[in-house]
Image 1: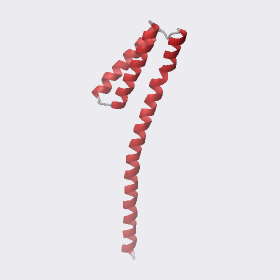
Image 2 (image 1 turned 45 degrees about the vertical axis):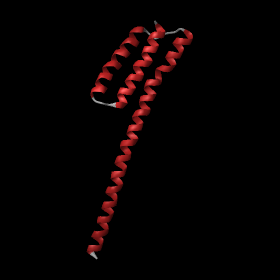
Image 3 (image 1 turned 120 degrees about the vertical axis):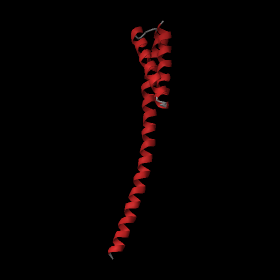
Image 4 (image 1 turned 180 degrees about the vertical axis):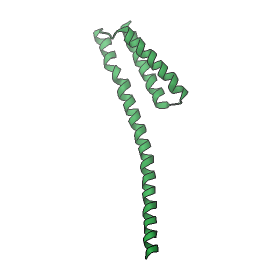
Length: 106
């Protein structure tokens, strides 16, 4: 009887371990997608400012845009060095959007 109980406990333990491993791999995938969604939200945030600059002729202060481009460029160098695709993509999108905004201002 004792051996049977220990055998069932072992099976349950192995099942729990398999479930844990599956959840851990799903967590990594979910977190990766959350990172890409966050990047999209942050980087495409400048689109309304670009549209407004083009349509209405209003602008963001040039020093603000230049400092943003400088900061994103520094982050870009860092992300390329770390081989981080998510941050590299986000930085490229951010730099592109801010360059468009700068071009509309000037």
